[in-house]
Image (tube, rainbow, N blue to C red; front, side):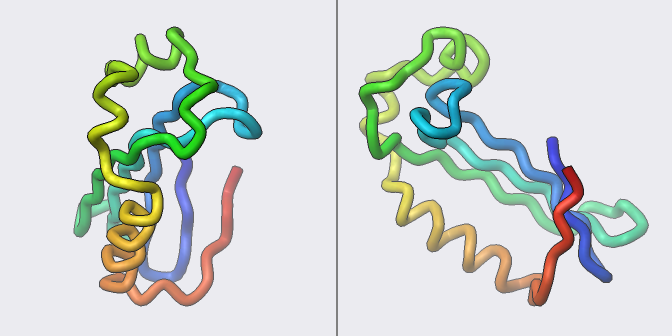
Length: 101
């Protein structure tokens, strides 16, 4: 889980994908926990989405995230997930973020 820092909040992000190659595989779920600077949880986000290019699907990734390939087709589009994520982040008035990898 990676953490994004700004002056007021910490964002912890977990992403599940159809495989382990970022150039070929797609996101199937995105989770985020937001804490204040002291570590108190103040927000939570979790959404799933169907892959845009469902031809690259790893059975190893399925074992990790537990979504069957047939289930993915019922999930919302990546665009819908992004809209929900932007609405969620809007509550925190994120101005700039320093990535810490």
